[in-house]
Length: 81
Image (tube, rainbow, N blue to C red; front, side, top):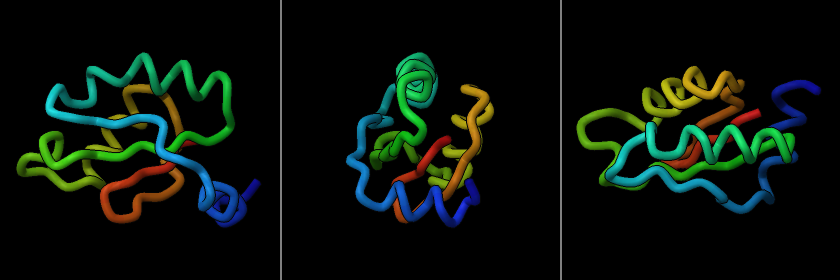
């Protein structure tokens, strides 16, 4: 599937992973488990997680930590494949 098709499919997904003040390390295992069960997972980066960094930077770090593809970031939400 192309990124555009995946983005379209992710549009109606609910957020199932929240990244908070504990940072991305706290959700690596959860995101990995969810990606094993599903094709797409939507994650939201709360203000406490962002600190001085952008959502894009955190999403890239999380994708690398899990070995997933980052499909898109929009606002404070990211979609992983």
